[in-house]
Image: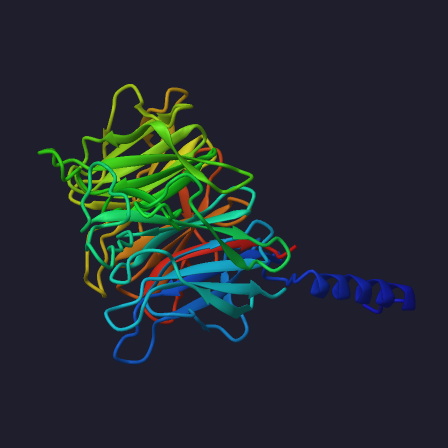
Length: 429
């Protein structure tokens, strides 16, 4: 069949438009980017890096971006966040016994390419390490959690100058460093604690939290940290510290019920979705749904903790898809060739109760040693980072039933190094 000159011109226009939008006959265009962090460098030289991918709208397929992998800007990257708008990425590098931890700032190019900008130091003790970071919903402030607060002594008396909150000691009090985020450059500026001074009368540069904190979550103007058990009591369960986060100044103020006891001993994740906060506990293999009161109190949902329907596993991450579904990432095997790790899918009723999604394939297998889980920017796909086999596993979400379906062009994608966590962002604007 021959095309007329008008027909050929029309066809050329369609092809040009498709190329301009990033579309192909096999895909539906790039709907966002994914960055997968790889931890401490291994013997073969991989690690301390970030692998970047484009996410295909039509298939969920991942295609590695140009110049990937990128340096992590430090040693042992474990987590990252994206500033709303997608132009800047912040990665927390824990460091090791030789190299100190830091926060690395990256700018994001139009094709998902990361360009390292600079590092920032947290205010934790020099022997400490940053372990987690969160950003407020407007992207104006970055919160970084350190396992131990800094403590200085009077040069003459040797007395401790810094305040020691109830529930911890000089050896294990944690700290939150707050940075303001420049809207135009993404650069960070330290926010000093305006209400707390040391015994010398100087405002401290951090916000103290409970003993040996490990996790943190920003939710509706409240910042929650998960801490080790209160060392001043005989209790063996973990605590939650609750701060109110000022949207204008970034200042953190302890809520009325600032320290709360849980009935959990090995909390592995804290996630929010809809009006609920979810804690997973490795020791009991449970998922605990809570509501968050205006005074920062976590109130257990009727029925309390739910036993994970996947037995003999360690739940390590929870993801909520809107208000209808909850997905729990379960880690079971350290074998790099055979994995029994999985995603367990639940529905959520109007009272926050979790019920197993009806599907003979539920739970859904993922790679070995999964660590983190995310949705794509349009909430069509879910992905896990798997440390032991160096992969990302992807599934398509059935928005009506909550079931997960294998991706059309394969659900496993190789990553450079051993992945820790992963993050996603929509196209840069």
